[in-house]
Length: 101
Image 1 (tube, helix red, strand yellow):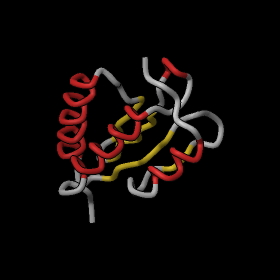
Image 2 (cartoon, rainbow, N blue to C red):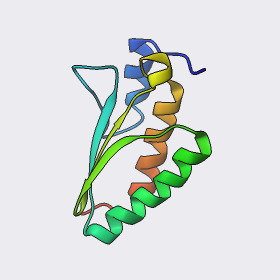
Image 3 (cartoon, rainbow, N blue to C red):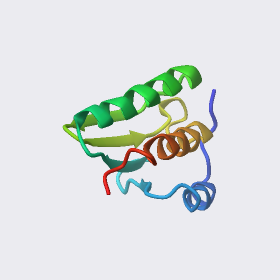
């Protein structure tokens, strides 16, 4: 079972994962990704879905045309775990070449 990270550990880690923000109302992080079109957004989600399955850690997300909103939290520990930070970093890497200017 994943272990919840301390607030200071999360804050320190977020410094190296740009674009992600702590949610003020629950133990989670959030980012909005904006792509050039729906197909690019869908390609990003497909790549991230495969990684989420591989690590057995799934995002809360939604897609409207070229925008993907993502929230990450670890329900098993009722907080943020290393899985959330790892998936956030993966998503940043996957999105980098696809983001709208």
